[in-house]
Amino acid sequence: MKKILSIVAALAVSAAAAMAQSVDQEIAERIAPAGETCMQGDECAAAVAAAPAAAGGAARSGEAVYNASCATCHGTGAAGAPKLGDAGAWGPRVDKGMDTLYTHAINGFNAMPAKGLCMDCSEDEVKAAVDYMVEGSK
Image 1 (spheres, rainbow, N blue to C red):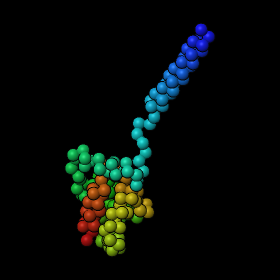
Image 2 (cartoon, rainbow, N blue to C red):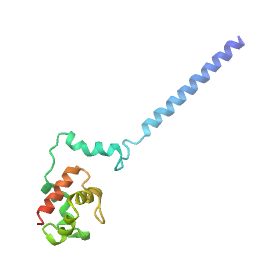
Image 3 (tube, rainbow, N blue to C red):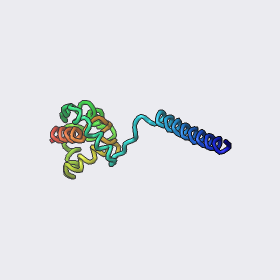
Image 4 (cartoon, one colour):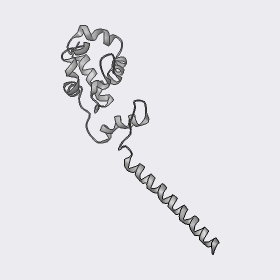
C-alpha cells in the first residue's frame, strides 16, 4: 500500500510539473512579440522587399515614387539633396556610376536615410526614382 501511494504521489508530481511547464509555454506564446525585427542583410529582409511584388501590386513608376517620397528633399535641396533638374549637382554623382547611386539611395548616404524613408518601396522602385531624377537633371 505504501508503495502504491508513493507511485501515485510521484505521478501526481510529474503531472503537476508537466502542467506547469505547459502553462508557462502557453503564456510565453501569448506574450511573444507579434512580429520580429528584420535587419538589412537578414533573409527576412529579402522576403519583405519581395512582398509588394508577390502581393500582385504593380510597381510604381519612378515619377510616382519621386512625387510621393523623394520630392520632399530633392525638390527643395533640403539637407544637401541634389535638386531635380540641377545638372550641376547631379553630374558628379552620376560620374560615380549608377550602381553607386542605387546603393546610396537604397542603403542611405550622408543625410539621406535608407530608401529616403519610403519603407514600402521595393528596391526596383527606388532605382526607378533614381533613374527619373537623373534623367530629369540632364
